[in-house]
Length: 286
Length: 298
Image (cartoon, rainbow over all chains, first blue to last red; front, side, top):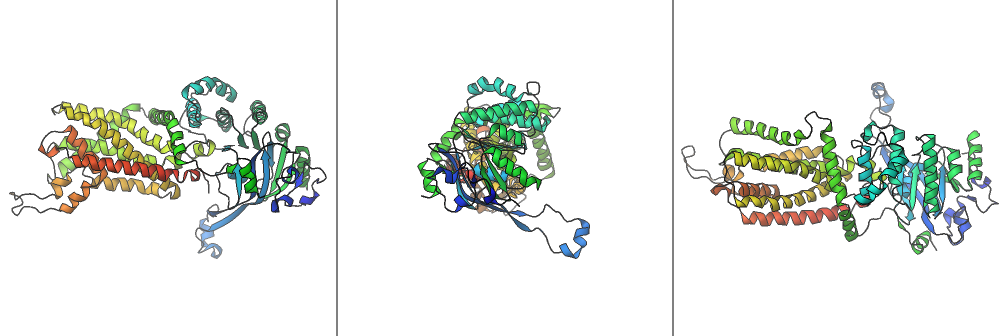
């Protein structure tokens, strides 16, 4: 990475170079921990020097017949490779924060989000949160063999709603997802955009204190993106905290009050969206 | 002041913890309609793509009974064959089928629903329970077939048929316990899902479904075929006395069939209840202990 963290705009209290607070966290003074002014605001998520290192079987590169014949790979069966995805990330998120998370592919954004939601254990450091965060990621449908309607019902029941409460919200959810015509089809017939829309609509049935949206909106079309960004702002305004992982700088600018820039598992910059995005773009152009 | 102190003072808890057991069980109970709805929806969608549809719920155990009846009733000798063999076989296969399919489905409940587990926060215990309830809902029509078959073959209707109601309720709870333990184990060790069909098959052949363990391995008096009589393997019979699935099968047969061979054994009721209480309580505790582990992707 060419950008020196100290080159970030440190004159502003809203942008904090990392490393300074990671070693000696002083949560008492807000500027030292988080970018935006946090005086009097309640911390909702504290990420304290988190490392994530995991071991995977290196089967990604399956040797071909030719590889197997070559001497170089002979005798190498399944190998354990260790991936150091996060190398000491620290920050504090407050209520009413909506935090954009940016970085190149493989910079550790999704790992950090999964760690915050408890789906990936931390190797060192700890994460504290006020309530269990919900993570909306791209990928599989909830229950792909069941229709959209049943996914809404089961999703609602799983989140603890009663049948009656779901019935009251059902039309809103379907309208929000914009899937009135397809709601009785099994979810395996949905496109990835439709799946993402329904998942977001189901998850936003509940009022989340902490919602993590990991590129889930990227596959949606423009209308849906605007609608979901409005919903994210609504959650934020209701004292919620939202993390938004995105490669769209425009939607980060539109929805976020604070941006975290990750690169190769370290936090490069944390502060005002415009400033961090400007620095990020500059580093990208190099 | 460290971050941990700061977190504690702000009322934050460490991510990846689990709620206390009592609170957890309450949360699961609150989601009982999720368990039932998921089981029902899954059965409907399972059969939607088959042209015979819901008929398969009945057809599968019938075909099973037919095949095993042909193989073990005709090809194999009559040694170890109890009175009312066809009824004996049908009850055995139908009742065991519920246990075997619940065991397999419950074991896979977490690993097969990873998308749901990773997207929404809810007590994961509802998934193996829903899998068992799904199998139980499929088991109910087969009970009806069983009863119709017994009436059609001229078995006298009797009040003790009603005993199957508490029996199968107990059986459901017992199976839930087994499914919960297996669901957690297969998260730690995926290979278990591949072993399960073999384990259930082992139980199928050793539980006494198409032969009577008491008849086959118990002592027999001298007869024309065995002039010396047959000492048998009493230890084997004693061992199966403590095998829970065998207990459930024996009680079901005793409740539904008549004759001296099918006397109700009160100790079996006691043992089966003990197995159920122990396995279910342990299963709930054991599954809860790893609650934070289930959504992990490492």
